Amino acid sequence: MSNTAADTEIDMDTDTETTTTTGESQEEVKAEWTDYDFAGQPKLSVENLNVWYGDDHALKDVSMDIPEESVTALIGPSGCGKSTYLRCLNRMNDRIKVANIDGSVELDGMEIYDTNTNLVELRKRVGMVFQAPNPFPKSIRDNISYGPRKHGDINKGFLARLLGQDDSDEEAELVERALKQAALWDEVSDRLDANALGLSGGQQQRLCIARCLATDPEVILMDEPASALDPIATAKIEDLIEDLAKDYTVVVVTHSMQQAARISDQTAVFLTGGELVEYDDTDKIFENPESQRVEDYITGKFG
Ligand SMILES: Nc1ncnc2c1ncn2[C@@H]1O[C@H](COP(=O)(O)OP(=O)(O)OP(=O)(O)O)[C@@H](O)[C@H]1O
Ligand SMILES: [Mg+2]
Image (cartoon, rainbow, N blue to C red; front, side, top):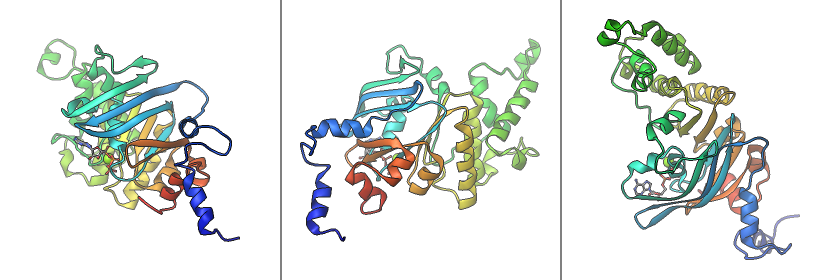
């Protein structure tokens, strides 16, 4: 039976009516669509998160628990607030002067927006990989060891040698481990002292992932990590993300539905206006979403 115009209209209405056929308010139904049940404790727990850039209300009342050791994909049309949301998870938005943030984000039950949160420590635990690879203009080795040295986990240089605390062996081990984890070791093991800017885009992105892993994070935030890469480099990053989820909590923004479907365990769909519309198992979101707007977005009717 083909859909009549009237049927379609009724379907479309499911997102805008104030009550449903079973009598719940639209608010309750919407809360249900974003209320994702999973076993175990959440690694990150976000409650009523709002972000304004000046008068622009970019993120509206988002509540969302993120399970540990899994991949959570964030999808939605451009400008819907995905990067804004991601940056809230390690307080990167603090750096944006016009940004005003309200709400709660807990990491293992501890409020990260607490005034006495140590931001260096927070960003060590919740690392970030950006859309465009941004290696330091230093050697491959130094890119990896920079973070651990800054955090005092590795001592190197003249003073350390003088004090008998030179950690060059530890550094070599760490560099090898991080590069192997990021599936880059085989390509660069013979040129660790070469400048990182001489690597290809895909290699630079894997180096940035290795750099992030070297500080031993618990959560890895990735904002479209493969959007500038060719299909082969993208496949490597995707394999890597799936692999990382065995030990880390990965949250990844992607514009590619196929990528979200391939690599994630659960998917959160944000839509225009900074609203989290639906959050569930990835299979459920792509095969049988509750919200008509999400279905329209996924099937390419808009966005
Ligand atoms: N630093 C900023 N100053 C002012 N407004 C901003 C800033 N960053 C983002 N915004 C605005 O907030 C809204 C959400 O932006 P955000 O970058 O989070 O979207 P997005 O979903 O990541 O988009 P895209 O898919 O294009 O990366 C947009 O309207 C954007 O213009
Ligand atoms: Mg973005």
